[in-house]
Length: 286
Ligand SMILES: [Zn+2]
Image (cartoon, rainbow, N blue to C red; front, top):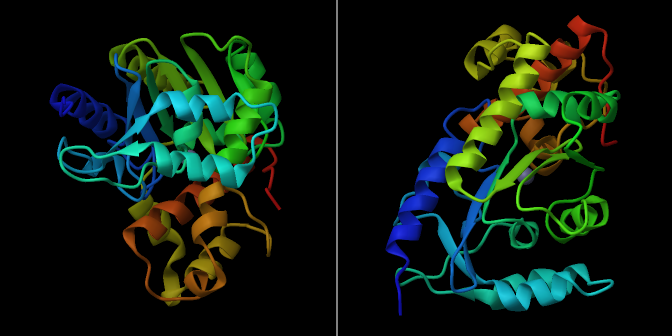
């Protein structure tokens, strides 16, 4: 049996490029995948940073056929889909890691898939005017309404995508991020770069610098909740999926600001400042 050594090397390179800066993805967010000629898919494992993936670490192998059968059902059950991902996971390089929560939607798309929580894409996806801006700048893209990560997002993509799903495309996930897919890894990285740069240039957005952003608001030993409040986040409001997933009350009132948390709250502050300067309105998840 093949050990997919070549494919592991390709996937690690793709992951490292897709996660090379916190502007493109924060913490362990985002994921990448490639399909193999024998009906399998290599995908980033859950909980691993994109930039930390190596050919030996952070990669899972899944069987596509059984997964796609479930995704193609008229109304697949979310729990059943999650279970199917676990069942379709195969050992790779002598071990079995837990595949990304987004394995199902990767299975639906073309050869190479890059999903990022890019601040530039999220400038569009977290904005009231987001759908209109996406249609204006990227008429070929699909704007997917907010859905919980995993099976729900997969079903929302299935519902809104162009049918049949083309070999290459751009998907904006509301309040979440960007996914691009293409026939080659070179092309998919080129598409990701082009989308992010186009948004950054069009709106003259500043670079994303978490240390500087947090430094501005972290006076008087402010905890994360105070920093976000100072930056103009209304009480109880959630702007990004990462905020929903990781910023619970204990974390927000604690003094332990980990690297991941610093990046996640910097995104919220950066977005609020960018909207305020341009007269745009944030669109909250809740
Ligand atoms: Zn994501």
